[in-house]
Image (cartoon, one colour):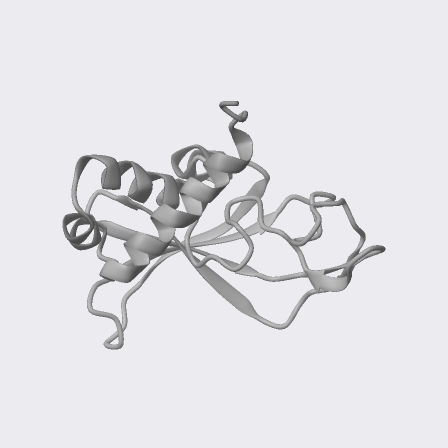
Length: 154
């Protein structure tokens, strides 16, 4: 099951621990929750990207919105371990599927940014079921990442 969900989620550097449908009266719709963790030895500093030894298991669980599976909303759920970086000190480890500080996976953000190239912000936010401002922030984040990786035109 681990390899199947890893392929469906299209995320490298993680182990799928559990998959369940979370249905509660607090949620407007059921959510497919995928419990994941980074591969052992893959812990990196979220600030500088350097490989670091683990410090502890962290202070809690975090969730990232992923691309939907059909009509199912998908969330990745993981503990946030901390690392002891020689340059940055004790910080939260970087997760291979998301940017530091983001509540969305890189794939979700890439999908949102691509949709913004062919539709307006209001349409994209409705289609992806996120707030209008959230769709705009995601597009700005993805554009910033692309600027960093592209060679200068001059």
